[in-house]
Length: 174
Image 1 (cartoon, rainbow, N blue to C red):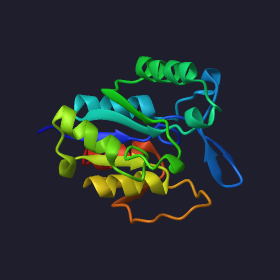
Image 2: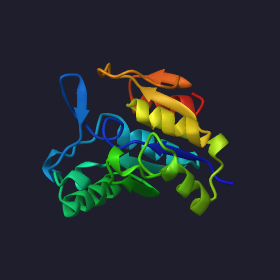
Image 3: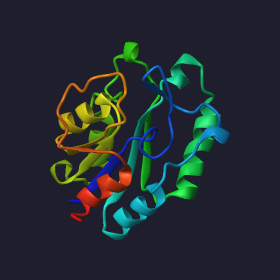
Image 4: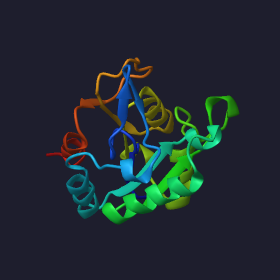
């Protein structure tokens, strides 16, 4: 069995725009921007043998606010910038009641099944309550990047940090 670090995209790897205490994903390719330390941290995780899998909710596809071609271009750009093993995306809204939209663990469970991942030996890193809850539901250890958004956690994370670099140090035992 393999071990993985599941990474939320917006707010973990890339910058989110925060308005009124709520983060918003970029909608244009030119607005996609890596956060500081992300490239170095994902390389260190790769070098230590961890799979790096992005698991991201992108409901702007379902609502028509984001062109699927732009999302594909964003994910292609992320793969060019970072050593990622996979990107798994839920393009539904809560109203769709799918199993892949975080806080449900479908994206993580599917990756585990297909890639032979030991979820108990893996981590979920995210900046929203949905990420922590999905990680907990999948059986992963969870790391919460706390940016002080105007929303409360529904599950207690295993670790609270301020950056992916700090999360990486925890995962790597440094």
